[in-house]
Amino acid sequence: MPTTRLIVNRWIRNYTKAWLKKDAKAIATLFTEDAVYHSHPFRPVTLGRKSIMDYTLGALDVEQVYEVRFGKPVVEGARVAVEYWTTMREKVEDVTLAGCIILHFAKNGLCKELNDYWVLQTGRQQAPLNWGH
Image (spheres, rainbow, N blue to C red):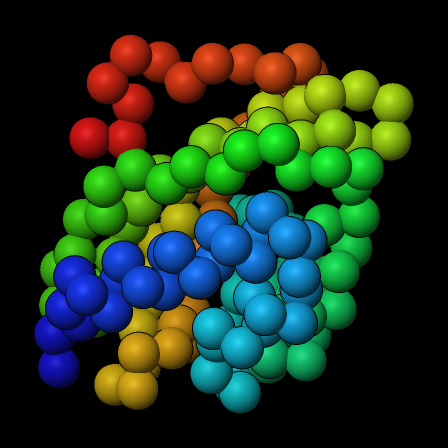
């Protein structure tokens, strides 16, 4: 069943709000109970909503999240690709996290698989012109 842009945009909006609030529980509710979460190509896979929440608690252990932006999603059936750009304050310095997530949605509108590809740069970097289109 194809995923609609409405479902995708709502999911991204809720994910963004939760990330800005550093709310791991809210992020976990956006996934199916048996979801598969690949936080990085060279890290172990995280399996299940509870494990996703635990991973997210650690990932959001930062001083402050300044900004979270997502680009325009590319939707193909139940799969979605979308770029993101965020700036945060870690323990001693500002960082910029830029990446792209590939999402696979279940029929109920929850994410059943996420693959994250990202790079971390020190400092608050500006997104390139026309980023996310």
